[in-house]
Image 1 (cartoon, rainbow, N blue to C red):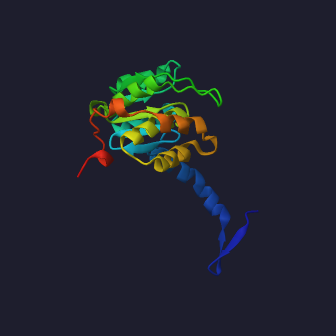
Image 2: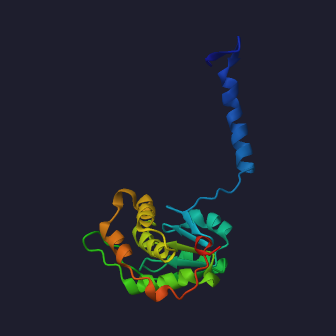
Length: 199
């Protein structure tokens, strides 16, 4: 027996709603709009610069909406075939700066590698660009933190942004790296970012 529910003073059979479910499901299948799923820890860094964790096939439709020109990967492992095919089909250039992912106290962030990666990020001909590592926390956080120093952010704000993405996995060694990173050799490069332009 189908249970009855009293609705606005009258009885209505709940079973009628159950009978509509296949019809609604059929409509949903026919009218499904493509879902855009951003990668883990995705965010806008500045005009034409984005950050995230490692994108996978579920994120490709979303990434297409960004009209990326470049992807900067901070992982040392070979880029997956499906991801390489996506980049190739969409005319996206891959810059790979392999930095080993390590846990404290064995974190070693090569300053020269971060410096070279920053040069790619600062070159507006590479924009729009997506910066990513495995989870979009530590290696990406260090690179973005060093970029923020170039943009003359105060360290409190730089660390606040780093901590928002690293959350419970915040590393003092990463923050120390950002604090001690010498930006003087990059100051001659043009900053083409919105928050860096002088009014």
